[in-house]
Image (cartoon, rainbow, N blue to C red):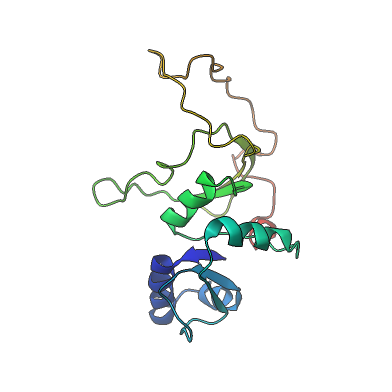
Length: 185
């Protein structure tokens, strides 16, 4: 699990004082924290502080090919860096049935480049959570210059939106057929 220093501080406090059945599993997972200010020893288990620049550290981690997925939790500025540097292969978005209007932060992907993504899978986790698995394009040509927008709001030369397709991976109730536990690691 990759995170920035602010998310680390918040999550380690939540896990230390909270009571959630997922917290023991989170403690077991290796956590890589990008920070130039945090210094070991740290109170949360399995922490490695990385003080190298993201643009060199993440490609080196990806090249290790140990089969482990790298995931982020929170850390919007770190995620923005990953997008800006073309380091994102896929995005998983957990949809919660909550709207944080005036109390929420700004849009999570506001600083990400414009991307045409591919929804590869949806999973209904329970009666309130949906997980979206989204493939990111090849980033070899990023960052791309912004294209002027037409009156329609689409970039000039862009394709119109495709019509919605039926979803063969959903049963009649709208629930996904896959076992959610097999998709969460």
